[in-house]
Length: 314
Image 1 (spheres, one colour):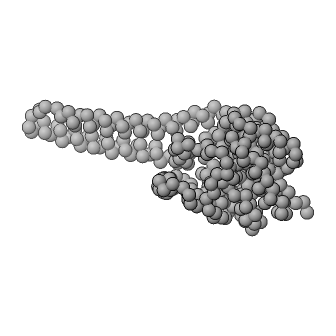
Image 2 (spheres, rainbow, N blue to C red):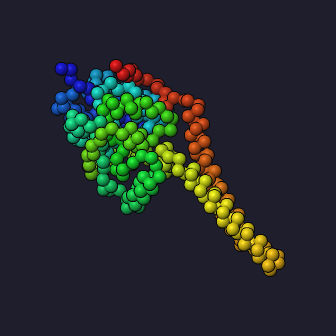
């Protein structure tokens, strides 16, 4: 019987200090498994020596595959590029900074052998700043109350996907990708593995506060139309209150005569209505912008060099 192939997908950006250590840790965990394996590094336009480290490994070890993108397209595009070119019966997605412990690979594989299509590693919030923990809890409560998919705090890209799950993800070729939502949207059976948060092995995090905010907005916008509906309802309520206010004002004029116009009332109304309009236009503009990007049908990524051909499903 032919031995199954397990693919490890590792998107990296300026991770020169971690590439060799990452490979060694992976080999320690993969070697005892009853699987053939390939390790796919996706260099997302790194400006340091990341690509050189990957090329050096690929020259020495046949199981190392690589894709180098022409520029930094972002982690979502890099993951998509890797999934399109792996050949495995299953794939494990993980970061290249060793915050996703390779020691969990064995547990993930056992979950796959039990028949699960997704085996997800869920991290704790140990070591996170208190304010970040608070914002994370609030964010996930808000997102799950308004979106069409369920997102769990601590569940990210670190997971095993069966070939069926991989092919399902590859069918979703939208430009504005939010993988957490896509994993939930495809459904399929899922097993959760919990682990304690791990600090970065080397280098610096590429996730600034601004990046986290933008990623959070993607999560809200990508899987629901409720913000547009909120704009509609808010506008309707304001219109109703405005009509009531006009009626009361007209009644006062008819019964008491015309008085001096109120500065406070005028300014308050202008600022309040102006703020609502700007927020509504911003929400609508976000959706229109995404539609615009999708209609251009640009590829999610462009490849500079690679030693892996695109996988064709048999």
